[in-house]
Length: 527
Image 1 (cartoon, helix red, strand yellow):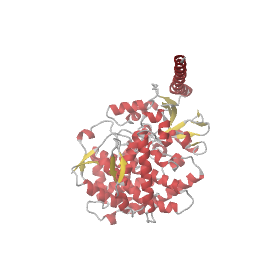
Image 2: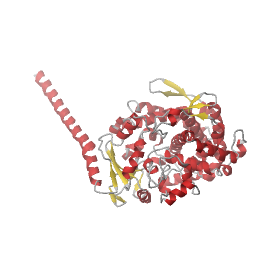
Image 3: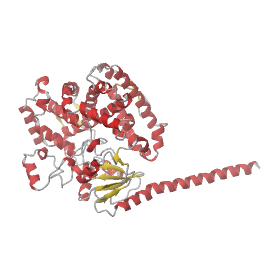
Image 4: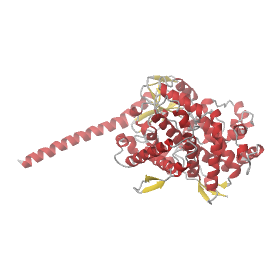
């Protein structure tokens, strides 16, 4: 009797398990094959829609990116080579994991989409889109980047535009220069330097100082416990802590388990999600302590919080976002600039001439030279920065948007619930918008140059939508003006004062790039 009872229990368990297994297989087959194939078929009838030639279930767009990495290229190099195939199209359909998506390619498509933001297209609610709450975005839950355009979000963005705009940013030039001097002093004491680490530390410190206060050096240097990937406890100061956690979060975000099992990301009960969440909560506690000790009334935190119309937790998330996004993107952009200036010595020579002509020389009076008026005179430097942002954009794709309603873009109906991106890399290499797009040529941004005139004569004239490093529309980057200013200040300081060399094999290497997520640990020799 007992044996019969055990047999029935085992059989019942096995039956339910097999049913569960069968249902799971059906679910994954439906999500991984039927949904994406139906999505591809739906859009295949539109001639202005590009559909990837090969269907890669599960990996989708990750497949060519993984191929790039395995071949020693930047993970987005494939997007440059894909551009000629998309000539004449307005958008691209692709699938990644469970989700079919659309990337807007043409300027016309981006312009039409921008006009639909935020009435029909906007950021999704965090809870309905796990992509808005993975990796580093966990830091900033409730920030303006991963929230729809409510009245509060719009007002907060306007406040940051004002405080980080051109007129307000000029007051922060001395802070940028001071921290740049500290960084150079540290670098010059070495024979070889991991330049991205040093520059990222510098730009993160710049943002923390400007946003939180310039009276916090003691708090920024204090050491804190950090749980490392091997389970040991490391000691890092606040900036180091932030950098290590952000890198670990990038790895977590790209973990396939995050995509296929979002519950692991939500519950944080096993590593790496558990470890990163623990470090994140510790970091937030530390940073709130830092804020409570700030007496700098010129800090962005003080100015925003004094308005008393925004929730302080939301402001805190916004500032974390700006540090995370601003520090990382500017550091990657500046490292790209250092690389390309050595790869193209004629550009470096011309830039040095302009800097010297306007008094930006080694040993110059930094306080006298580094003013907004003098910085704005550096026209060729502006062209160099624009070209760096074109040829190697710090972020190779935009944050995703969400169609809250059925919309139509370039006569293509896009159903409610579709995820939408703006193409960045491909557009920056589009031969219909850029003459010789694979050539690093700052003069293309100078309307009076022979190169720009030749481009115009050939009918190749980029417009505002051809430049996508900072996004477009009402959800574009609010720190664009500050980012451009900081890049100009850093270049005007480092180019005359920092002599370095790049390994020859790196200068001749194809597919190299320094956007967020790349695996190129550029080591510079300090001369």
